[in-house]
Length: 129
Image (cartoon, rainbow, N blue to C red; front, side, top):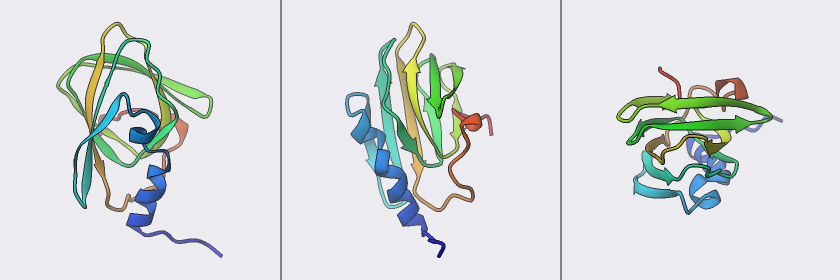
């Protein structure tokens, strides 16, 4: 028997490894309503996050930063300037600040149904579209 989940159930399942719970020292809820949740993330060079999950999101960088995003034995290095917006497809990962500057970014997490499931580790990190 296949289990079919609605949008709300998938969102709650994705929050099973909520970054606000796994890394409360670096993630905070800046805003939330029934359709979106906005997280602010701030860390220092060398900081590593625990494995956590993001639903489909838009990431907006406040500072320039360099990070390593890892999941299931695969990783990708991300180097982003300040003031850009990037699509972050639903994914589970951990992160490490591998640069020499703090990371400061906002995530606008979508609570509505995603047209696709969590991505494969090859799709780690932010995307241009």
